Picture 1 (tube, rainbow, N blue to C red):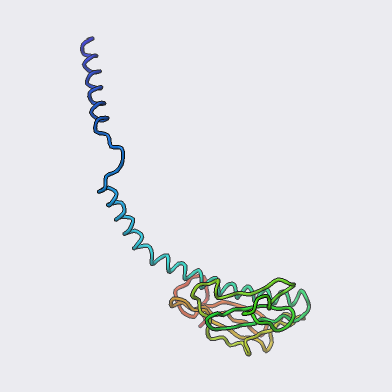
Picture 2 (picture 1 turned 90 degrees about the horizontal axis):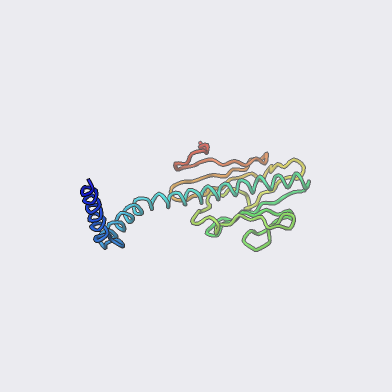
Length: 192
C-alpha cells in the first residue's frame, strides 16, 4: 500500500510539472489580432446608432430648451407683473433670448437678461440643429405682465436635424407646446 501512495504522489508531481513547464505568461499575436478584429466589427455596427442617438438628443434638447424658455418668460411676466420680451434669431447661429428690460439681441453677450441673469438658448449648444420657418413677427414675442398672454405675438419655429423636425408653438394665450412635424420620435404629438 505504501508503494501505491508514493506512485500516486509521483504521478501528481509529474502532471503539475508538465503544466507549469508549458504555462503561458501572456497572449499570442494571433489572439490579440482576433480580439481587435471583433472589437472593430462591434464598433462599426454600433457607430450609426450612437450618431443617431446624439442627433436625437440635440434636437430634443434644442426644442425642449426653447419650450422651457418660453414657459419661464411667461412665468416671469406674471411674477414680476411686467412685460417680458423674447427675441428669436434664425440662421446658422440661431438663438432665443428673454429680457425683462424690453427688446434684446440674443446674439450679443448679456443683452438678454432676466433679473440680471442671462437667459439665452444658443445654436452652439446643440450641434447641427437648424432653426427654420420662424413665424414670430419681427423675430420677437412679448408676454403681458397681467395675464401672461402673448396676444398678437404668437408664432412658431421649427428645429430640424437628420430628417426629424420639431415645431415649438406659442399661442395667443401664452401657452407653449412642442409637436413632431416629421421623423420617428416617441413621446411627442404630431403637428397634424
